Length: 283
Image 1 (cartoon, rainbow, N blue to C red):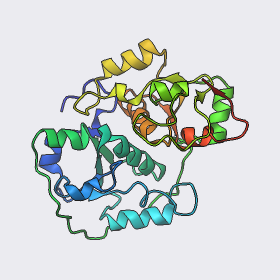
Image 2 (image 1 turned 120 degrees about the vertical axis):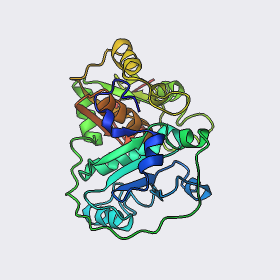
Image 3 (image 1 turned 60 degrees about the vertical axis):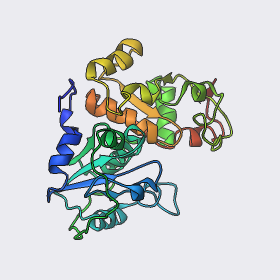
């Protein structure tokens, strides 16, 4: 595929690449969707499912799984430390970039995303299967989880906001204005207050995607984030949405496609900020 001017174009692969290499012994395709039942209706041959609720989140603590659980997940998926993990999913790769982001907490940098995700694969008339591949458990040793480089917690975000550093709210304009608590046609729940973090810029995540689900070119992305919003690659940026999935898409765009070095995803996002006592909001 063309690099489209991206700084780290190697983190993206095309559907043609998947068709040619998806079944390679050192490649593991992982499908991560908003609709966790979608995988069972048909998936790319050789792909396994990542359930963002069951696989990546701790069942008792509002946090991600720890080192031991991540090792167990990787072994179950047949992933070794040398395996190239390739993510794809629905919604222009919302949850694929989310899973990619969570894997970075454990230092698994040998990871890629399928440009266009599930939608592009289907639109091109490529094969789907309901057959689940057989898996030989992998021998995987995880790093200790290190959130700081890519994740912002509430306290980090509050300090970031107080210092006047750039915040990017990737939700819809109606959510940003406080008219909705979630996107239209979704249950309006999860937060007591509508609005946005004081000083945040509203750059809806979907502006970074083409109609076919692929990412826009680097030139088009820079026009949005830099020319329009005044952001710079040297900026220290925190992105957020409602629960961190849409903002992982924008985090991926800024960090990998445009090469911003200091970008963190605030996964607590509006469900935490909008419910917290004493945190400043704007409408």
